[in-house]
Image 1 (spheres, rainbow, N blue to C red):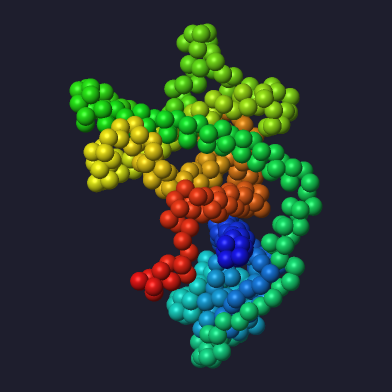
Image 2: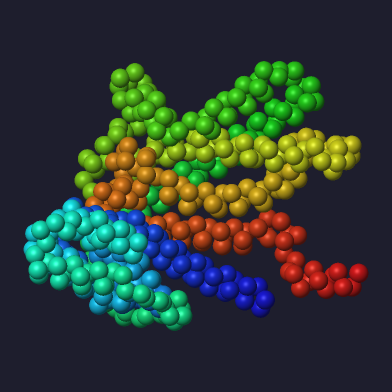
Amino acid sequence: MKIAVGYVSRFALLIIQSAFIVLLVYFLIISISRPVQDESELMVSDLFKPEAPAFYFSVLPGYYDLRLVNMTISPVKTQAINLMGRGWTYEEWVKLHSLITLLEASGGNLSQLQSMRYASTVGQLMHLYNEYDYIDVEAATGIYLKTLRTLIYKDRSLPFTGYVPTLHWWGVNNQFHQMWHQFTSNVRERNTIGEAFGWSFILAMITFFLVNLFGTLWAIWWMQQKIAWQNNVRNKKWVLNSVTFGTNLVYIMPVFGLATLLIPIFTTDDISPLFHWFPGVGSFLLQGGNGPFNFSSFYYLFFPALLMSLPLSAGLAIRWHAGMEKEWHKPFVQSLLARGFSSKQILFGHILRIVALPMTIYAAMLLPALIAGTLIIENIFAIPGLGRLTFQSIQRQDIFTIIVITWIVALICLVSNFVAGILSPIIDPRLRITRAELNSNQASV
């Protein structure tokens, strides 16, 4: 019962975390992707152009006028927020721009008036007003200037309630709801993301299998070479040094570097027809729209997966080797050797199982990293996966597609972490002891 409750609470936490990630990515992209209009782009007629709120609700300071929410982000809106934080009202701010417009129409100094329109503080407004050119001012213009001076130099103070944050509910009339409704009603876009996920998932699973296979075998052979050298079975230290150097060299090799090096060798006849083992770059486009779940697609994805797996396999081997070497120097290994156990029995029967626990957690985090890291390899081989779709969505500024892809990767990361938490007690029985049992054992002692 306790185990079931623990799994349910973990699953609920997973849902909350995934929803939080969606909102975090949405607000981050909104804040980055919405350009701030400058003075040259913003016309006077655009100052009060309506725009839907970003989300269902907003938490705003008390002095913030709700009519500003629907305004386009611009230096003019920044000015309004700053002035209202100093006690100005929305009507006074609108009057300020009306007077500036009247002065511009009456032939005033346009550069000074434009600077006054975009001044962000009261001090800047006062400074610009004092430097305004008053030569040959007509009677009507003088009235405008006098009214403007009264408005700027008015003594104001912000009440305490102006600093208290307030919650405002906007309902479904917001940008997030509109994008969500547009996405859910667009069957073609949903199918595109689903098919892209299928390609990336198959590519990531093939890479995941190759990484764990090559990395584990590589680390075991590496450790066996070191044990043999320490036992003076073969006094060939240069072999061990060569393996260490080669492993680190492959580990730091970028994927695009490996692709540049190996694609001309194994996908073309340029070097030799004998090495033309895999289909060439872009040959996927000749498949006639086959989906990711067939043998021909698997054949095409194998070489990209192999290129992605080589540096990751070296990294996995380094981690396996570091853990096994650490365990090998512990006292229990010497005790087992003294009792007649062979090095191979100790390595496969004890050390691998001990090191497998942190490596399981690492492997669980590797799958979402593979799906998120397909951007380069998918664009090189023209694979229509999430990486290529992300690149195309950034070019089109398709915000919600980017959010959905980010949420998919984040959800896979959370699920992988959840699965790793389930597998850890299976690998290491010591983790099956609950906190309550541990406390009861300590109390009994």
